[in-house]
Amino acid sequence: MQQQQVRQFVERYLATFSAHIVESHPDYFTVKLPVEVDKDIGNRPFYWSWVDKMNLAYQPLVLTFTFHPDCTPEGLRSEHLHLGAARMQQIFASAKKHGSFVCMYEQQGGLLGNAGKRRSTPLVPWLGMNLKVSLLCDKRRDILLYLGINLHQPRMVTDFTSFLFSLSLTPAIPDYYYTLDRKVTIQEALQMAQQEVEHTLEQEDQQWAEEARTRLSEEIAILEAYYEELARREPENEQTKADETEEEAEQLEAEPSLQQEALHSESDLTGPTSVEQPIPFDEYRASGGRILDFLRANGIQTTSREEINQAEWKKSTPDEERQRRKDELAWQYEPRIEVSFINGGLFYLSSVPPLTRSSKAKSMRHLPASGRIM
Image 1 (cartoon, rainbow, N blue to C red):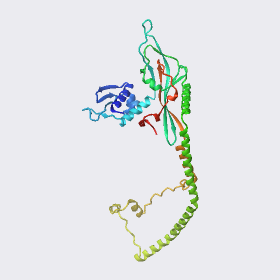
Image 2 (image 1 turned 90 degrees about the vertical axis):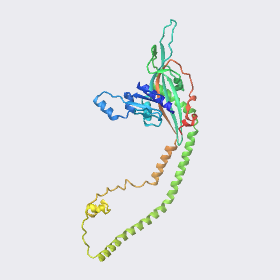
Image 3 (image 1 turned 135 degrees about the vertical axis):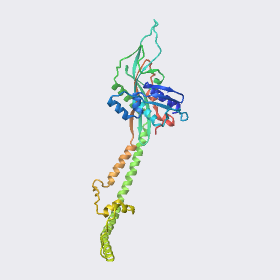
Image 4 (image 1 turned 60 degrees about the vertical axis):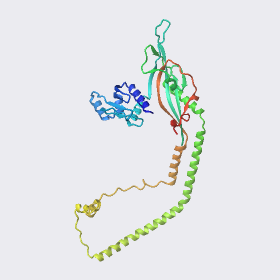
């Protein structure tokens, strides 16, 4: 997004909440935030918890947003808004939270009858849904579906969003318009959308799933070969570990005798042992000693470490490691399909969208490289 597009998006976002623009300038504008916007992007959670608990009057937050870093207004505390700004990410999150579902009405020019009087116009309810169908394995491909379902008469069209962009929509029903009853329930509409998704998947080439399963089989074969080779080498490893254990045991047996000989030789050389006087802590620390050594030297007991239950911390067996790796490979390579809801709305229209087939469904692979998700 360019800076001009960032400003247009922010202005549309604030206009949706009927925010009061205090001052508008080509390089910046000052806005008084409404309650919903302040709670989402104002960064005042403790203030709002205090106001709601004490039932106090709301003090609006006034912010100045600039869109060119070199054109900062003098005497005003402003904030530079760009695509990567933290405040801009908060605005995106707020728009997604409040705009995931809308209700809009089509507004056209007045329709005059034979008598020259304005006549009422019926509005047909349509359920619009934007869905993302993801084909997942170790790779990913997304298919976007823009579905429109007529709730007055069972009918479905695709590419419904492009048709909506050509209309004049308003959040309030205009004068001399009335809405028709909904004869199709939301559950029935969702079933129609599910059938359309299944029809779209049937038209897709299933080669991607077969290739993913082939790669999964190859990876599992490599994994099995590795653990088979590891199992053949296990007897040699066990013999080596047994030899190392015997050597360690011999060394442990030899250490006490060496320590006793050293103590006897020291006692013979030095004669009778003398009692050392305790050194003050400040003097001991000044000489570079550690606190733990000082405590041990003065007979202060240290807290014993908690014993570790070896049964809980035992090393995984090769069979357990093999199964865990196979589960990881299955999660990575096993082909699967995920359908997610992007946004949607209830639209009352007097215009009739053109009837299109699901073959016109847009796939991410047909979009520019910057719009792909791989």
